[in-house]
Length: 193
Image (tube, rainbow, N blue to C red; front, top):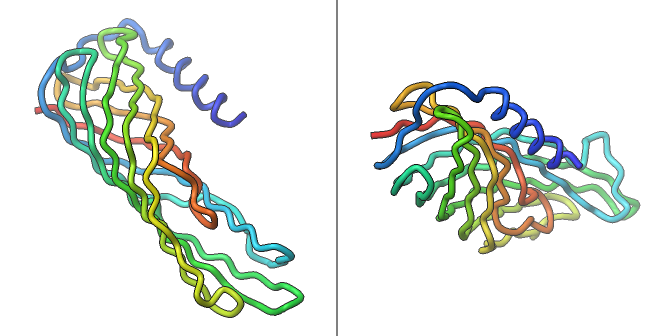
């Protein structure tokens, strides 16, 4: 439900901004941004003062090449941040720490809404490393690397010919069994060469 609301808000924002002037047509670009990522820990029978789920901020860098106003290729790296969870069960206490980051390579299709605003979708592959460590009952827990589908929908706004702002919902491979979930938000800025 939240994803649908976010997508609707991005489309509504893009529609409201129609009537402004020109986005970059072709060439290389680089960018950076922040990510908002959901974490969830599911320990059977656990009770705790800590929240077993929540959001963490992370960082993202990316680069790509626009072949024309519609088609591009993009790759990037995202650090999804880390989150700790301490818990109590009838068998004892424990804690888990999750730390995740990933890479992606994707094709990108952009549909101009106006001269300055476009909506886009990306589809490709992602490799995500989910590191887990634990204490107490969770000693010996380990994470895993997962490769899966990378997909994104978003909007971009051209401030001028060189600089654009982006907002997107990203699906980064597969969710970890404990820790980071696959879908998050990203806000960024890109520079066109």
